[in-house]
Image (cartoon, rainbow over all chains, first blue to last red; front, top):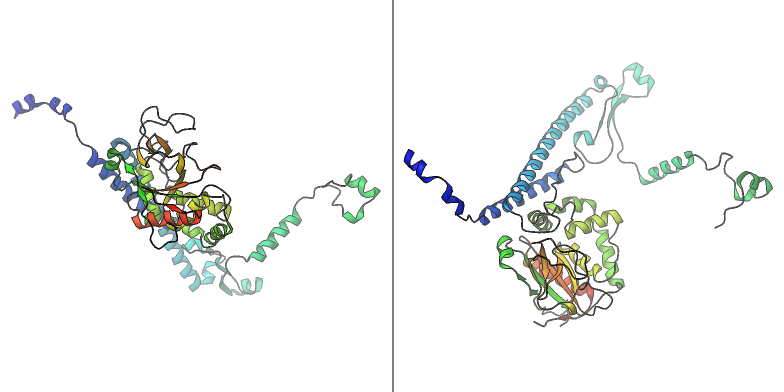
Length: 199
Length: 223
């Protein structure tokens, strides 16, 4: 055995050309599978939790990648998939805990005073949520009449527009002297606002 | 032969160099030539872009990468070293544009025709001035010192390029050479589809015929 080890050495293998094509094909197959998995996880996580799905380019222009590049790409994709699975699992645990809390809150509103759970907290799409609050305001608070209110969902477009208008109305005015109505043209207006703006 | 005719000629299939074909089984290029050039899109094309915009939502964009054809292009982009979240695949690029702009904006022909065909089928398309192509299209690796005619700088060695008999006419999934771009002087347009593994042949043919139909010219069947 010792003779064999001493005689053989590995120098002879240096001149053996290894066809890496099959290895590259296998790595490409793995990259495809990981990309599919990452796409599935991305779709599942969208809107719930932000996952890092980016894997940087290996080349500025398209080219046939070598074995080392493909291995690095495969490893990075595998890392992203593992991270994404972990994040989704943690998110699922949090949502499950929130659902249990919601069930307890609905069963006993007085025991969960002022607790607010949004739909996003339990992994559901849309706006709104559940709020434990007293019936009839201060009276209910004094009497211990607590209830869970379900919010009515996303605000309507009309209400959003009203909010925008309200914000515009609250915006600081352009002149410290106040706005100058068009009808109030005259020497006094010019003194306050300067000459009329040319179109 | 008219595009609307019941017998459609098969698109021509280009050559893929033996090394590239061995590395990327399923990679190919097919094209048809249409007697049409650049110009403003007609009302029917703009209407169709509008209809496509109306039935395309954000949820489509999010779920798109799980569908077979967009996924196939994403995987191919990974295989050739590109990041599909930076260098977008054609269908994902259009989806992003739709979400940002609120609609598929008209950019004239042949761009609108390619947009419609790509959104309908997911297949990557590009267009060249057919009269400036010499011989059949193909895909190979670039040789040292090669460049795209009319574009500054040399191509990085061993980049995957689309070629004709004279040399590169465009980078694969990238810009076309200035010489072969479709412009005002173009009379005949070559619409090319880039096939990758996982994209069914029927989708490729459908994409080419939709693009030809939107371009509006006669499809030429010379071999």
